[in-house]
Amino acid sequence: MLKSPAPEAREASHLFYLSSLRRPLIDRAEGIYMWTQDGRRFIDGSSGPMVANIGHSNRNVLDAMKRQMDRATFAYRLHFENEPAEELARQLAAKLPEGLDRIFFVSGGSEATESCVKLARQWAVAIGQPSRWKVITRFPSYHGGTLGALAVTGDDALAETFAPMMQLMPTVPAPTAWRDRDNLSMEQRGIRYADMLEEKILAEGPQSVLAFIMEPVGGAATAALVAPDSYYPRIREICDRYGILLIHDEVMSGAGRTGKFLGGDHWNCKPDIIALSKGLGSGYAPLGALAAPMRLVQPLLASGGFQHGHTYAGNPLACAAGLAVLGEMDRLGLIANAAVMGELLMDELKGLAKRFPFIADVRGKGLLTGAEMVADPDTLRPIEPAKKATQRLLDLAYERGLIIYGRKVKGGVDGDNFMVAPPMIVTAAQIGEIISIIGDALEVLAGELDLPVEG
Image (cartoon, rainbow, N blue to C red; front, side):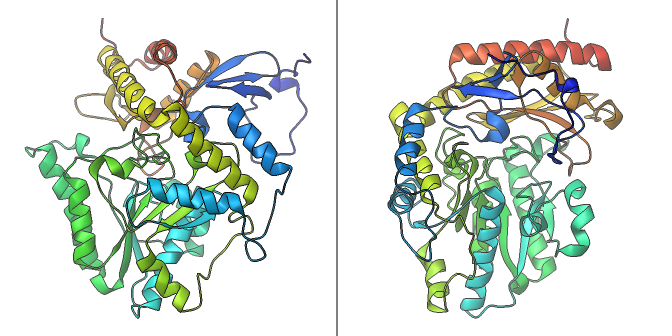
């Protein structure tokens, strides 16, 4: 095999999205593993950015894509219907809460969340409520990188440059109940955080509020944050009280990753609109979806149709991949495996937290887990941003052949966390290997940054 030159020896890249830090060239990937051209093996401990849910190079998915490639790779939705899109919509609707059976396919998560917002707005106009246009979101949160999706993203670091170009939406605090130092129970804290939505609705004017968008289990912006159980039904009650649409961003938490098909299914919390992507295509093809009930779609159709679209909406090759991905989830029992392996992973992460008390919180559902690091576990004082603790941990793990995920959790400005979210095919032995590497990396990090370690 030809070996790639060392990153520092390669010529400058023409790809401007690369940072100054060069990475090795990928050669192949299979299961939870990825190999570089110079022969190094990595464990994909985060499924990329929580995408490769069913693992890499699944033969049945590749074969299904090849069969579709031999027939047609592209058919514009205004010119033709195609069987993969029709069948994927049917099977996807069967896995969603009852009534959420009208599907609109897109190519990614940002397109999916923006499509949800545009559907909501057009529905309000179609039913004679044009005063409703505000979409309340949580801070921090992340719902995508397009200007429309960024407008409903609670992240100062991402939004600041583009703020003059878009209509930023109102925010309420994300339910970081684990941080609170009060005499309330977790159930009471959940209600309190939910009631902040009602307070914001009243402050903005109920007739101006269109929707509330949230991730049932947090993604990159909150590192797998899970609210107290009482939060979810209260949010649903508040939205119903004021005629506001509840949008669940399941881009990261959906498609089985949390041990149920949707993150919201853990609380039987039924939204009005759902955004899906990432695991739906599992990295085999760019794919996302909006799901809504006919009661929202029919007024749009009656008033001239959904004023929205993307060139690759319902692409037959992407939908063939998505259809095969759903098939493999069922055939291999991957949602059940995510639940069982998720419990093991959570137990192992909690064990690391005992060993390294600067891990102040471990959270998540299924194989979407996160841990937050602080300088002082008693006061929750953050690690100094200049120390770049998250990036250093990610680099230490990478040097040891493990890929994990991390990002600032306080609006993209400070706060340190890491996320562990391996493919849903992961085994107990592989989780043991992942935890071992993270433990070694944390040991080095603690020594470098003078963070507390149990003897």
